[in-house]
View: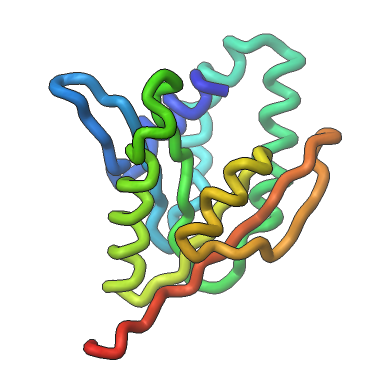
Length: 158
């Protein structure tokens, strides 16, 4: 999955937020602006070599996961959050929280809704801290998945 996310992030038109420690990137927060969640066919084809390198079983699995997730995308205007990742040895040091705070502040400033999917129950609790709420749950290839949405927070002083 790491190779797939790396390739997917490289193909995103909007640059991800990046957390750095010196010259090293220690965290990323990918985001797709409204209308860009789904890669056009030519960009999908550029993404496929990373998928296929995992072998035929992994390729079918990733295609089925992506297809199931795509069906859950909201039809209304939204930003798509993900992938969000922090270097494993640095998790728990507020790096992910700081990236999410920046992302959510931007969504609030722009009055935009955000959507994400996760297959990790710990992530559900993490995203809830930032105002995301589970709008649906589904098993994808036998694994529970949560689909979450965050409405922008309207500040009284604006």
